[in-house]
Image (tube, rainbow, N blue to C red):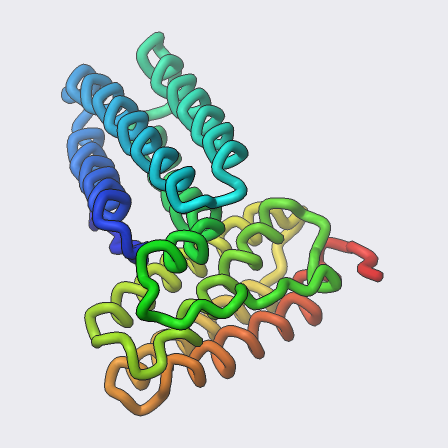
Length: 262
């Protein structure tokens, strides 16, 4: 299993924790593919939960220290996530029929979603406290008229909007490595988001799925132009993210979820 490279928030402890967690899951994914290693997989999963608890504890201390207003709510999300993952490990230990690879895959998706969606909510507070050399504009306001009515889908859309803000701020300030890391995280979130949408649909819609596929191709092409210096980060955010995302939500997502938006 390839270890996803997620966007760095800029805090060394948090970023290192994210790398260690994703590497641990990638290693577990390899072990879980071999049925004879079920006991080893269980030990590894319990060790991963311990690592996750430690990381969440450090993250909560840092969120409070930088004055993030949502720190307590975020900590409660951590508790629920640990409980949910712990229940899955318990079910596997006591004879659940689903394979260990499925548990690891679920954990990986849940962690990616947490790091790219929920964690992105404190980026602005962290930047303001730890990177005073950069300008800190307010996050791009999310227009509630773009809500679909599905809480999970809307949380993904807001996270994508926050990623667009991050690209906007990088004009002339980011090296290729930083941009590549952010692009990889964007691609990871987009693929997770599209999978989620397609799973939630009550029936198959090949046209909507095709739009997703075409956008991923556009994202890859624009990303290469960005890394080669042919497109600025702000132009990438405006033309590739802002415009496409808003159009897709209004033309495809809202009608699909049958939500009347005022």
